[in-house]
Each structure stands twice: as C-alpha cells, then as structure tokens.
Length: 469
Image 1 (tube, rainbow, N blue to C red):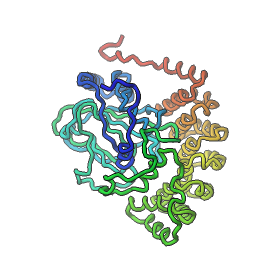
Image 2: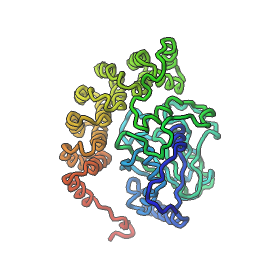
Image 3: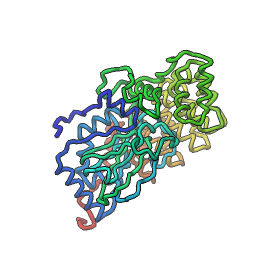
C-alpha cells in the first residue's frame, strides 16, 4: 500500500487523457480486507437502514480513508487544484438491475446552469468490490463532456469506457461527461459510491506533474471520432493558468471567418463548437462574428458563441459588456457566462453585473452571481452583491451566492453575519455551501460560528435503529 501522504499527481499523458476523454480510471492499493470490510458495512447499512445518502461518510467512517488516499488526492489536486472542495452531496448507488440505465449528464442539485467546458467540477465514482463487466460498472462515453446533444453512437459498445476492475477502482470524470449504469447480469450487489468535488480557485499554474508546458497532440488523438483538438488545447492552457489563451493565435482571414461563422450555425455540434473556438482565435473579425452570433435567436448558436467568447481574451470584454444590456435574457446569461470565464480581465463588468441582481429573471440573477464569484477581484464591489444574492428569494440564487462567497475565501469576511444566518436556510445545499464558505474564510469569528454549528449537528455513527444509545 502507498505509504506516503504526498498526493500522487497525474502525469502529462494522464492529464491529456482526462482533457480529451473526460474520464480517467485509476486504482487505490488498499488491502483486500479493507474493501471486504467496506462492502460488509454497506450491505448492513443498505439492508437495515436503506441508502444513507448525504450521510454516507459519517455512517461508514472507513470510507473517508479512500478520499485521503494519495492516488485520489493527487488526481483531484491535478484537475481541481490543491484547495478543492468535497461537495455536500454524496451518494451510494446500488445496482442490481439486469437492464442498463439511460445515458445522462448529472444535474447541479437544484441549480439550472450553463455547463462549463473548463473543469470547475469533477466526480469520483468509487467501486469497493471487484466489478467485472457482468456486474454492471458505470459506462462513460469518452469525449462527450463538451456536448449537450447525444451525437455519439450509443449502440457502439467499443466506444464506451466502463469502470470495470478490481476492488478499489475509481473513475475520475469531468462533471459533464455523458454516462450511464450498465446491466448487472450477475445479480450480485454492486455498489458505486459517487462523490462530487469543486475547484475553489481558478488555476494560476499547472497543479499536476507537468513537464511539457505546451500542448502537443498525443498518438490517440488521430483516432478520435469526436475531434475537439482546439477545445483540448484551450483546456490545457486554462489548467496551466492562462486566460483567453486563444486570442489572436490564428491569422485574421476574412474568408476563413466567414466559413467558420457558417459552421458555427450548422447542425453538427462538435463542428460548430470547433468553429466557435476557432473564431475566438481569429482576431477582431472572429470576435465580431461571435458577438453577432451571441445575439442569435437560436439558443444553441448563442450558447456556442459564448463558449468561444469565454476563450477570446481581453478584446471580447467590451462587446460582452454591451450584450449585458440586451433585452433577451438568454443573451444576458450567455454574456455573463463568458465574462465569468474571463475572470479578472472582466473586472470592469462588476458594477453592471451587480446591478443585474435586481433583474426580474431568476435565471439571470443565478448566472450573474456565479460570474461575480469567478471574477473575484476587486472584492469590494463583489461581496456586497453576493450578500444580496444570499438574501435572494430564489433558492438556486442563494445556493450559488454561498458557493461564490466560498471562492472568495478570506476576501468574503464581510459576509460572515449573512453566512451565519444562511446556516439556517431551508435548503440543505445552501446550508452546506454557507458552512464551507465560513471554513474557507477561516477567521476566528468564522471558525467560532462554524464549530458551534457543527457541534450542534454532530453525528453519532454508531446510532442506528438497533442501537439508539
């Protein structure tokens, strides 16, 4: 078993595979007895008490050792940075069905949002028992994390990655990759323990074992049916700490821009996404084409234009600021999204974004709150706006306000009284994010409030219906 507590960081090749495929299969090296004990505890809990849901970690305390394992912490550090967050939601999936599940992307637990191409969120799916294909491991369709539509060949089993393997196997996946449960034809119990993690700080430098600073195509790329090479390179650059890395990286060719604009509006999603990012690289002409497409009545075209603008750098900011004044909520949401991904380059947008917290559309307010958390600085204009978000009548707005304050860490200290109040919110995830925000603020006042709350809610993992005291 790995003795060092130092995270085992991903290599360049592993990071490339994760960026390209949206999935990486790894394995812990606990002894067989550890996994046998976990499965025995899971069997007892599920049979006697049912699914413990969000309480699975305190109910089965040995499970925390999995998420402290250097291979797990190293994989998460590599993708999400060293100060990643374990989300309040966690779930144990029991599969005994001989029928496969449907392909899906997971929701954001009450928050309807535009999905990030950059890995702000990730999941780990952990298998505590030997899981051959016949036992129904999770199936993942690689390379689909950027796609809203199911344009892949669902009937092609050779293209599906399954998390089959020995006990201790886990799948690290991009939060937005298409996946499903496969058929359990053996009928024996199969557990998959799903945990969600979030990045709390935007990358400023590689956090994996990076040797080559430049993205270079790997041999596997030439065989990929879903070729998204410009997205892969942009994600590599983003994870390396670059913002708007595509800006002016291609010649500004009017004829090429015209062709790319036509592809952007086309029906094939991988081709149109490639076109959006290629336009982001095509100078002023490409940015102008994207800003025009942002205003398109077709939501799909507008959304893809926003992805391109999110990688287009400083030159896109002025046009995005104008788009915040558009009457269409869709355009405003997509413009705010792109500004958030441009982070500090978009600091001039803070006053206009803060004013939108008075908008009648909850969807607009939610996106603005997330964007303000991504921009981050200067915090003087952001924290008061996020405090207002914590008081929003919309639960999803409050959910994101607490998460955005969390990302500001100590800069969010002025929000401590409101975060303390949010610990009594009716929504479990607002409460969870508020508690985490206090933890990341980490001042004496925040710690006192948090400790009092946690002790009031302390859990006894030995208390069951068979043992009440």
